[in-house]
Image 1 (cartoon, rainbow, N blue to C red):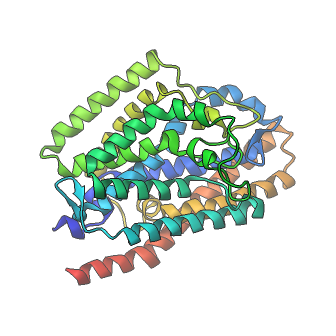
Image 2: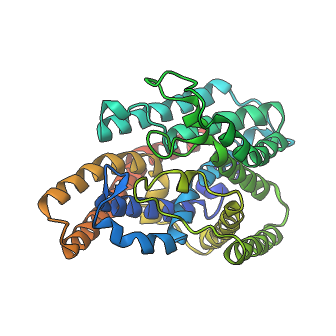
Length: 369
C-alpha cells in the first residue's frame, strides 16, 4: 500500500499506543490534582499529604510531558508526502496557519468554559503546539530538517540565557492580551504553561524521531540503537542528575515543572527514546480494534483533551461539595470515582470521533486512490 494513503497510526506503528498511554495518564493526573488543589494551582491541606508521593513519582510526569513530542511525531507523519530530500516542499502555509488558528480557538473556548472570561487568553498546550507546528513548518520549508534540529538544540541551550534576560523586564505586550515573556518562558504557572523555551525542543525532537523512522532503511537497527541510547541517557539521569519533580505547594504547575534544569532533559530524552521503541514494538505485535480503547484514545486525542478539561474540572468542584474531603477516606473515594468516570468518558469521546469523524476520512482516502 502507498504510505501516503495510510493514516498516521499506520505510518508510525506504535504512535497510537503512545497517544493512548499519555492521554490516559493525563486524564488520570488531572483528576488527581483537581481533587487536591484549589483552583488547580495550590495544594489544599489534604493535598499536602501527597507531597512526598508527588516528589518521588517521576514516570507518570514523563509520560504526560511526552505529549508535545508525540504531537511532533504526528506532524511529521502527516507531512510525509511533502518531504523531499529532507525539505518540506509544496505544503501550503495557509493550511498550517488555519490549523494553528483552529487549535488556538479551541484552547480559548476550553479556557472560557472551564475558568471563565478572565482566563480566555491563558497559554496552554494547544496554543503551544499550534505555534510549534508553525515554527517547524516554516523551518522545514526554508531550511529543511537540519534547521528544525538546529532550532531544537539552540532553543534548549539558550533557555537559561533567555529566562535570565526576560525575568524582571516590563511586560512586552499589554496585560489584557498576555505577555510575550509568558509565552516564551512562562510565568510560574499563573497564566502561561508550556513555554516555548525550553519545551519547543520536545516537539522538534518528536518531529526528528519520526523523520528518521520514516526514512531509515533498517528499522531493527534504528530501534536497537535508539533503545540503547535511551537506556544510557536514562541511567545517567537516574544516577547523576537530580530530575525529581520538586513540588511547590503554592504553585503546583509553576517553574518547578516548566523550567526544569537542562540536565533533567537528559533523563527526559532517554525516557522518550525508550517509550518510543517500546510502543513501536507494541504496535507491531498488537492489533488495534475498531472501537478499542487504544484506537479511540488515539483518534480522539484533541476532543478528549478539550472535553475532559471542561467537564472534569466542574465535576471535581461538584464532588468536593458533596463529599467532605477533609476526611481522607472521602477524598480517596471521590478521587477514584472522578478518575474512573473521566477515563470512561474519554473512551466514549474517542468512540464518537472514530464513528463519526474517522470513518468519513477513511472513505475519502479510499475514493482518492
